[in-house]
Length: 163
Image 1 (spheres, rainbow, N blue to C red):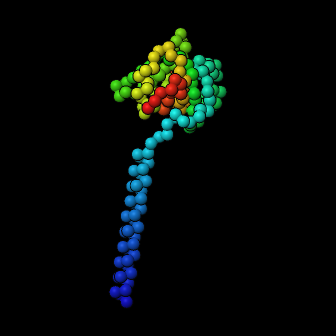
Image 2: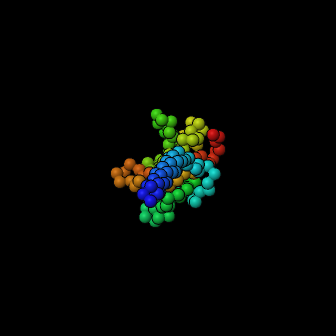
Image 3: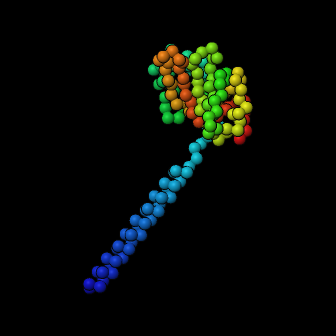
């Protein structure tokens, strides 16, 4: 009778330990997959709004609260068309395209998706482009320097580029 109980207790502990080991293994696999998953490119996603850069800036300047509510959300994709004021490349080869009226200090800043960085080096000041990006926010002009609208994970819609 005592031998049977010890065998049963041994089997219970054995299954318990194997169950915990299996749970730890599954959690590790799921964690690895989440950590290494790739973000979807905006290249093939339709934008929720299509707007000119100057019109978008004017919307925020004239009524920041209303425009903020219109474009707020986790995945609001905008297609913004405008003239390139500046193309900024940092030391890590990340590009930011600044769009808007060249006579204004306000601009739309598009932080470009690094997956397509080879096509961004051909962008020139004064070129009119359409860029799709995820709306990231509005930084109001408080010191007369100029307001900025930020988009991230941006891709070029036109002119077309290749990867």
